Length: 288
Ligand code: GLU
Image 1: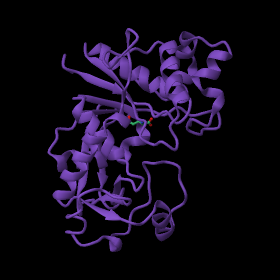
Image 2: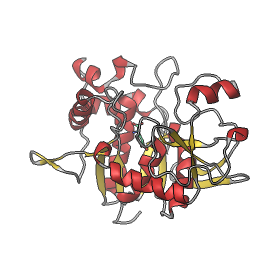
Image 3: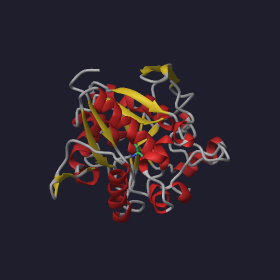
Image 4: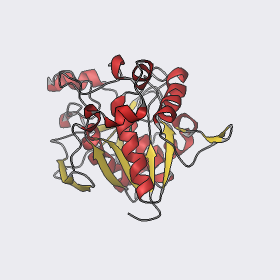
């Protein structure tokens, strides 16, 4: 890693942060420190239905309590505040336009539910493992090319045929995902007028010159999709380091709904950041 290392932590304020987030962000911070680089805090607050100020403020308080710190951002009373995706709309729109002009994306009136029904995939809350969009539903190549604005419809990225997306994960080593088998045409713009996660993350990571993305391994397939967006926009992708996921005692991956393992509740129950980092739960799953 070089001294130009730039990392980021990118919570979505849709609930209070749990121990799994804290561990991922801690690892992100340690990797930035070890490389003598910088860490950026980015609030992924694009979804007005799910994001709340209470959670956004709570995330900063909880992470500061936990010992996380970052090195760049707007001044909020002498400390670095977050960059907010909700304030960066024009950047996303610009990339939407470039992808559209190059024929990589198309407007699509099918909902997630339509796709799930068509493929009879089991319902999953995991954003990364969406059912595969049926190829027979794809419109002709020029469809949507003349649109001036995204409008009130979803837009999907055309997943290439016969393509394996390979990358070397900094923790897991070589990874490979096959387009149209591991994932299909994916959302880049939502009908509520906002960029979808995959597009917003790529545009922001590139604009912020992030050199390494540290995030949970539930997003491995998203990395393959995002590499296609980097390629389509002619952008250089960062390195990726996917962290192992924390599970609860029943083997379920931690989610924001597991209230007892939120940093807030753990703090109220008398845990200290140090005791949490030294606990077995913290380390289980981390190899090396
Ligand atoms: N905002 C996402 C989350 O909270 C993380 C996205 C990323 O790191 O790329 O799960």
